[in-house]
Image (tube, rainbow, N blue to C red; front, side, top):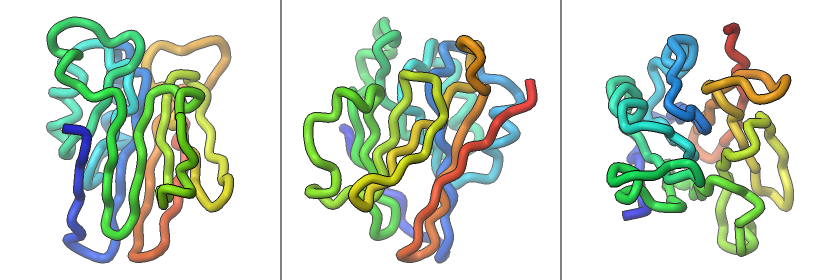
Length: 164
């Protein structure tokens, strides 16, 4: 199943974003995601223990990345549709493999990983968010996670750089 619905309990919801852990779930990432309503993992998880630990914080909607292999990873979808309140989010590991116009399909946010480069870019009314990687540092890129804040019709994203 590649759908996930988060029914609003209150007016405001916080979604934790993480990607490219590659088997390393740092305590700083766990602390940064504490208190969120849902965690989205955009692939390259590395090992199932990462998902087990994240599920201790909040429900997890995860997808498979290009480095996720084995029986545990075969059960993960390659993309995921997530609905948070009235907002539609699309999760894909490599945004360059996105084969459609998300604005035309009424998505508010596209969440991806793969590059390890944390970014937030708005294009045609759609936020494209890559939370970066809190796993093994790649090149000189920051170690980071992200959050999405939903408050009724309003939605915004932020990147959280972790001190490691």
